[in-house]
Each structure stands twice: as C-alpha cells, then as structure tokens.
Length: 238
Image 1 (cartoon, one colour):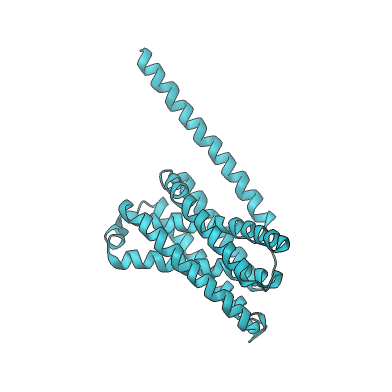
Image 2: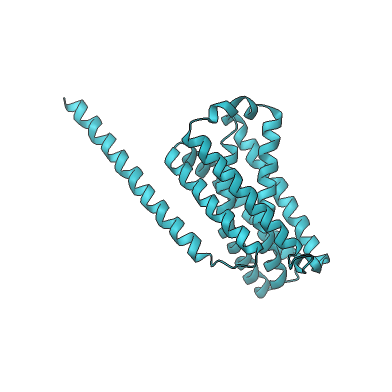
C-alpha cells in the first residue's frame, strides 16, 4: 500500500507539471468566450478531457501497438503528436496575429454562439489528448494498477479546474502576458512535433526559459504598477 501511495504521489506530480500546458491552452481558448460562459466552458472542457484521458488509458492497456511503428517508422502515438503539434502551432500563431493586429473583435459574434462554445470545448479536449499521450504511456509503464492512474488524473483535474480560472483571468487582463503565453504554446507545439519525429527535447530546456521569461514579465508588471501608484500619489499631493 505504501508503494502504491508513493507512486500515486509521483503520478499526481507528473500530471500537475504537464497541467501547466493545459492551463495556458484553457486560458487562451476560453478567453474567446463571454465572461459569463468561461467557467462553464472550463468545467465541461476539462470534464470531457478527463473522460477522454481515462478512455486513452484503457486503450493503451489493451492496445500495446500504440507505440509500434505503422508506416515510415511512425506509430499511432507519433501521428497524434505530429498532428497535435502542428495544430497547436497554427492556433498559437493565429491567436498572436489576432491579438497584435487587434482583430479579435471580428470573432466576437461567433464566440457568443453555441457553435463557438462547442468549438472551444472541442479544442480543449483535443489538445488535452495530445498533451496526455506521453503521460498516459509513462503511467502505464510505471504501474498496472488502474485505480492509481485514474486517481492521479482526477486529482490533477480538480487542481487544474481550481487554478485555471484565476490564472486565465490574470493572463487575459494583460495583453503582454497573453502574447507571452501564446509564445510558450508555440514552443510547446514545436516540442510536441519533434517528439513525434523521435527527437527528444529535455523539458528543462523548455520550462526554465519559460519560467525566466515569466519572471521578467512579472517584474515589468510590478514596475508599471509602482509607476502608476507614484503618479497617483503625486497627482493627489498636487
């Protein structure tokens, strides 16, 4: 039992680290919706993503061929990663263009429709599947106890659901952070694509520069905040 709990803690940590990618994706996609619909989209998108991840778990358990080469030395896993990486690249570049060119207003009517709501949910589910392919395969390689893997997925779902809203709102209120988050998604998309080509990229090479860039941006935000406070105080004294 102690070994199972230790393994559960390890898998929860793995899911939470990979959940950073999910939070960024959710923040960007849900931001296209009216504020009143964002919490509902996060809940339904993540709930369907969890069900899809559990279904993938059983698929991996019963289909060992998921990592066996099919054609051109590519497996089902590789094809998923290649397609998902290209899709994430396309979406991130498109969103950066919309943000920089201030053309998001043209998408506003569609985002208020039912089709826009369902589109956001489908994007969350599809990209969660791409993000979770390696974590599910790794988890199955570590243990054959399904309840341990499912428990780790459910705990990470609760954590991501709790933090996705505040983090997403914080990013969307600051265009510079939104562009930075989208730039991170481009990096992640390239990494996923390279993984599909069997080119392993150490995660430290991705997360350390991302963390440093985020730290610098937070310092910049703090600087701007202090400037506004000093100007306000000077105006009050005048």
